[in-house]
Length: 247
Image (cartoon, rainbow, N blue to C red; front, side):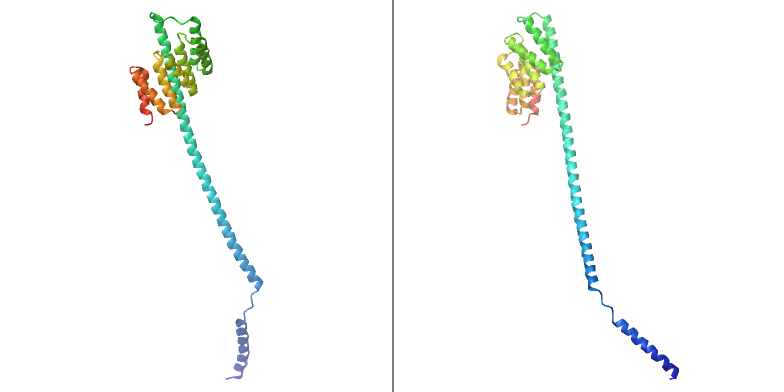
């Protein structure tokens, strides 16, 4: 081996020793930095957990609010349906009352051309009666009630006394004062059981008892009407209403 080669090998060997020594000894990591890295990792995990819990709580709150909205919408629909039913019932009441008033006017006109079967009412009684009836026809129900009550007090046994009590009951019925309406219709049946107004009074008494939720009494009243006045329009209406009563 040449002398020049020997001279090159010695420095190379020294470098190799130095390099190998550097690879074998790694610098120690700072314990403080290790602790900080661990804390950073733990804080990150906690942030993710808290974030997930907040999202869950928010989602639950949204679900709860959506359920409340659905419930409120359903209730609004129910109220709208109830309101529509009430409006129809009110229209039916007004239509029925208008028909009865028209029938009364027609009957009065026909009676005026026929021979009187009973003494004519006193002029004052008839005037009071017509004024109260006009108030009822105009749907001034409070004024009609006052008029019929005053007439009943001033002419308790007058020729129009049965009609007075009947129309007083109608005025109470259409304003949903059912206790007073029932009492007025009952007075017609008790005081004038054979009056021309008796079938209608019995029918409206049955209707009133239905509104009072006295269904057993209403059924008995309507059945009695059908039995006692079978050929009357009131009996036909009574039979129809009986089919709609709960069994």
